[in-house]
Length: 238
Image 1 (tube, rainbow, N blue to C red):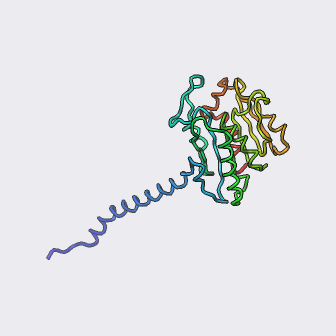
Image 2 (cartoon, one colour; image 1 turned 180 degrees about the vertical axis):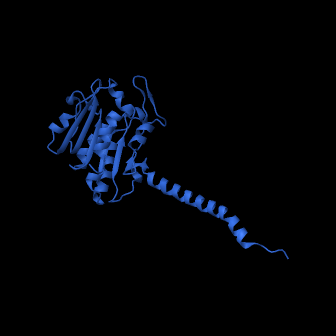
Image 3 (cartoon, rainbow, N blue to C red; image 1 turned 30 degrees about the vertical axis):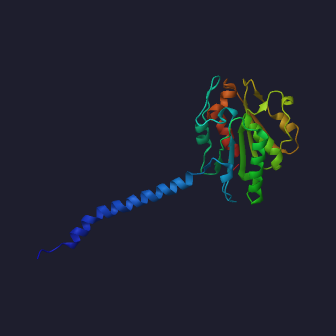
């Protein structure tokens, strides 16, 4: 009877066993990595609530309403909604980027936002862990919601959201920490200083005036010159 060298067979099986182990480790690491980065939420109704988590809401401009793909403006070119979301995404917080319907009503979405943020606060989320960013019409939603939320420690960012003439808008008193950014050549948007001047509940106000020459289109794409101050403002460590 032929003898079987068990040691030889065992040794020859090691490469396969090692390969299988490495394969399973790679799969587990992949799943773990996905779970860490899967923090972008596209519906305000699906926000997980955790007192350990931080939250950033981003409200896009009117040009993206009702559009499935990144729309293109005849004046400013591509509105890179996909790139904007990717640039704001971080493992440090949940990014909520709900896509609005066409001709969305500002008051409706502002009330929904205020209700959701109030829900987070009622469940023990620290207001310093909540940041809300809005561009253009999205900024109008954010500014309207700020008065309803009524919390001076939440951080807000308004991107080209305030009209050049403050008399053109009838917003309720703003409440919170406010960062405003606009481009000097913008024919529609200007300073948000009137919000801070008209409300004693604006606990902090900063404004950045950009000079790229892109006007309203400055915020159509994720440029570092405006992303850097925004990310610094909404950082949970700030």
